Amino acid sequence: MSRRAAFRLGYVARRNRVFASPKFQHWAARLPLIRWIARSRANGAFDLLAGFAYSQVLRAFVEGGLFDILKDGPLGAGAIAARMGLSEAAALTLLRAGRPLMLSEEPAPDHWMLGEQGAVFASNPGVQAMVRHHRLLYADLADPLALLRTDRKEPTALSRFWTYAGALQGATERGTDTAEYSRLMAASQHFVADEVLASVPFRDVRKLLDVGGGHGAFLRHIGTAWPHLALGLFDLPEVAATGASVLGAALGERRITAHPGNFFSDSIPQGYDMVSLIRILHDHDDAPAQGLLGNIRKSLAPGSRLLIAEPMARIPGTEAMGEAFFGLYLWAMGSGRPRSPAEIIAMCRAAGFAQARFVATAQPVNASIVMATA
Image 1: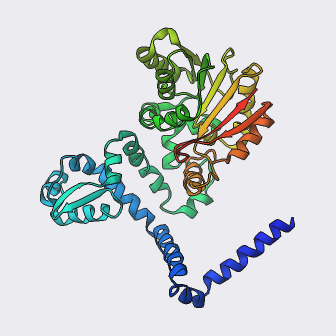
Image 2: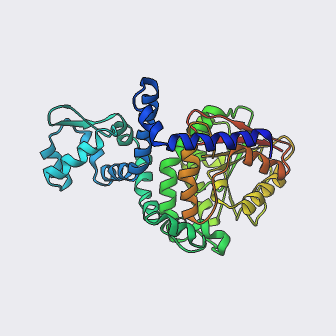
Image 3: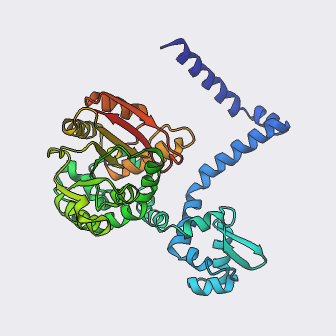
């Protein structure tokens, strides 16, 4: 162990002993600057305790249609209760619960409107689709230790939905959940596309292949912004065919090529100067993810690039999202894990890419980017 690591370990141990001391807590609560820090720590601790309740308030707003109702505001609690099928007392409880979360606001007595965060949710069906989807995660996390003790091959609410995650356990197609999967991706994919468009220039790209591109939501955003691009979609046969049809109708059939296949076992189509993996790598465990990168590398001519965009671990400011949220989400899904940019870059180099680099984005909670060059 290096001296630096040993010093760090010792510092953390001493810090934790101090923070755990009742005498220190009592003293800290009485000094102005330290009191502010202590209060911030206390609020953070309570947020950890109450976070599930906050998420359920949000879920109630979405599933109860309250965002759409408040669009018509200002409304009184009685009118809101009638439209939601709740008692007025229950509606008030929900409205008041949403107020500190900025989901709802009461600018005047009994005049309820959307709060700042509520206005964002109300205008974005993709975010609301994700909130509805997370009922599955909440079910799996009812007993988190039980979930962590299970074999990851055992079915969960999330793994049943994400049937494609079972491909490594013998599944040959996405099955009956394909349509719901595609609706969810189409509703939310623009978050990632926006980060890519703001961070990556496509001026010098002629042909872009999206591997595991579903029904083409990402390619549609990129192709709309950059109309010179020829676009390829590689996915399982029934998915690629539908995606190509949707993209052709939106962007013109001559720009679109469908490539049916399995990206683990089939060769990746050649002739593209950029390949994209959008929220794909973190869905798979290390061995298959490494194999996928190697498969893509074989298809690329020298100088061609691979664009990887997904939420990543250990990004400053979004650490909790990367490992606390996605770590448990992907565990419940039964496949994959969040990786840091450094880990992804190392995997790209192991796959034979000449170089790889991290590309910062404005909203890493939606996606960060690693760009690798063959």
